Image (cartoon, rainbow over all chains, first blue to last red; front, side, top):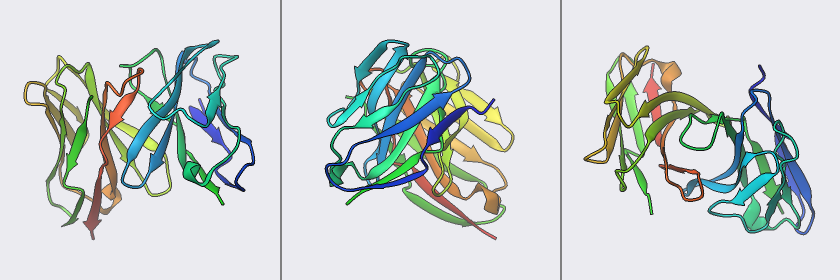
Length: 113
Length: 112
């Protein structure tokens, strides 16, 4: 099993550009989520999904969209990037919704100039 | 709102020492607590998951304890090695909206 994979590893965007961060898991997990990690702030939940076709907002959802068309994939879209979205983004999955053990991907480091 | 605090924020010790990392949480009504390790520029690796009904979990040189009533968990690392150098994070369910609430981590350096 590859576990949770994320692409790209690094990305630089200009303000106003859009992009999609990819996340995939091959463990047949129902629950997937996105976090951002900022210095001094810890990890914060952006969006999550409890299964294909079902998504919901986390603590810091503004500026981000998600969809879940398959069990395996959970992309995160930035519609119009802002410097405040400069961060490291982590995708996580678990067999079912919290409080199952969470498995994290390697992260995407995003810089918005 | 659940809040998680980790003390100390940073720790530097010589190789071979036994050490304790602390994690406290404000809402004791938790299902479990998870300890993670994060290497620089890398993702999070799950170390131990303690269910609310358990008091301890062990994996190799790592031992995690949980005291729900006092809102505390400790991660004990025995016979530390330079390879243990990393940031250690604890997290509990209850971040609102089905998420985890994380502490800010303890940055650990083991000196050879």
